[in-house]
Amino acid sequence: MIEQRKLADWFVEQMRTPPDPEAELERDAFEAEKAALLHLWHVRKGRKPATARTRTEMEFAASLEPCPSCGGSGLSLPTLQGAGTKWTLSGACASCGTNRDFTYQTEGDPNAATHGPDELSRLPSFLISEAKLRAELERLIPLAATDPRARQRALICLNELVKLAEIDERDARRAELHALISKG
Image (tube, rainbow, N blue to C red; front, side):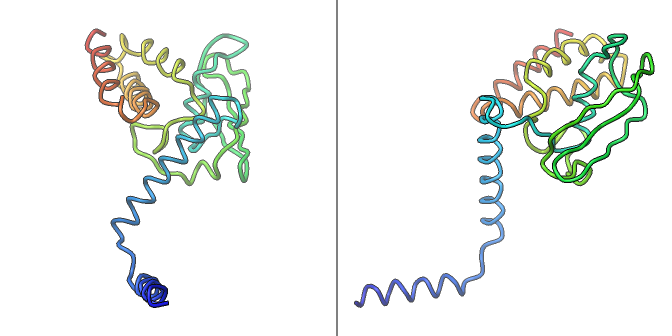
């Protein structure tokens, strides 16, 4: 009975103690990373649809899909419409003007998600495969020395490829990608 009272007193004291904000942030970051990795595993196994988080990610993914009319890439003046978890990116092919639409499942409003300027989202992309990112990076490397837009896209590819690596392999991935760029 005394042990139960001590335990009850301990619980009451814990409830009175305000949470440590730093520990809360660390736990939230850990839980978000765990959820993202689990979601990525489900996407790779075909158990969940590949979802987009940001408009930037959607535009980047659309730019990797060749136009069925001319084989070109990119959209002129893309517009984004939707609600909830379904959004459509529309625009004309930058090369031939053919109207194109890309509908994506999202994790909410893609306009509301924040991310850095050299990434598609704070977390790894579920929408774009590692193979597509690597192919785009290899295409961009020869152009990056003279074209600032190619350099920016290459940096995005690099950051996304590092995020897709397992946590303990990220430093090795960074070194591998740095060597790839140095050759280009």
